[in-house]
Image (cartoon, rainbow, N blue to C red; front, top):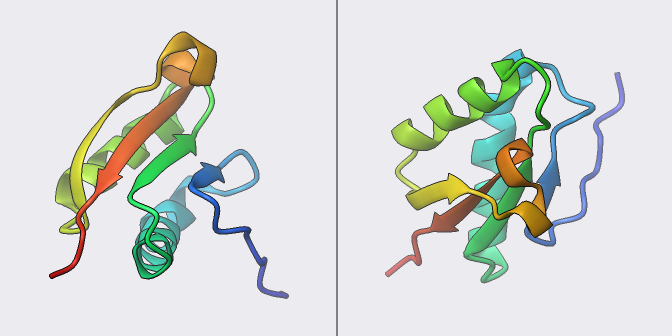
Length: 90
């Protein structure tokens, strides 16, 4: 299986990923965002049944890279997206 290259622009759309891949994906994406001085990230998990959102929120609670997170406002995805603030190194 070929690796998928994602743009690192502060917006991560998880629609094409399986929930089991989320923990490693978030860690890798956040690490790369911080390396590029991107500290505000929008994660699009979709509305659906909330399974992916629950998985994302659990990972965010356990991540040392995350300062805070909250539901996105309506114009940024509402309850189908989560806004994350990452810790600045140093």
